[in-house]
Length: 252
Image (cartoon, rainbow, N blue to C red; front, side, top):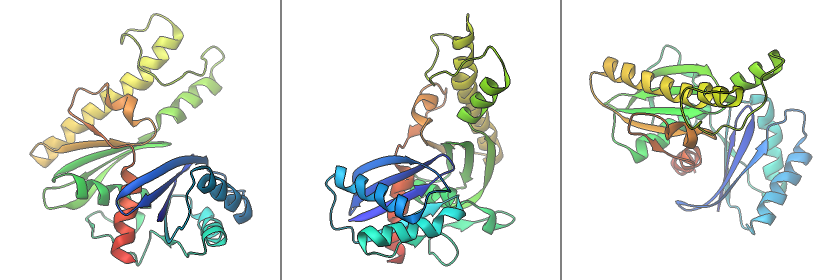
């Protein structure tokens, strides 16, 4: 079985795959101060809780380079396998046509690889996590660029911590766009506002491409946001786990 580890700024997403089938997934909080022993204990508990044995391979995608060494040691400690890390020297099959390909985050590479596997080009993909990222793959299958915007939760946390009267809220869509109280207004701004932003980017991306594209959304907040978009959008909960599997198989 394959252990796939997607390290984000807020969460570490774990996935266990048996060939192409995802057996189980889970989330841990990202903490750069934890040691390899602490992460080994967490990984071991995750595998035991889900009755997973016989990990024969592992792969890590990370936007937190300071954690890579500890995570690789933790995986080696509990499984005996040496984890691949998505980065220079790893074959992805992705043609990256931006000014400096080395600047492209591993998470975007992995997401793009999975999106190309599942959908016909051109493709527009959004990842709604700590940051909201969007990228475009043109009809030739080339990664041509995208956008980075503030994440939904980060924006809400900034509002709540910087104002005396605005509370923390759960991220569900309001009953109507015009909120009649603080909570409903915040929900409208966060959920409907982000959905409207995605709709706007889709229109502008397609205008620059000169054609319609398949649109994919992933990330922890993707399901709720995508339901409130006006465009036809496919939500992929485990897109990056699938991408890690594809890249692992290209390199094993």
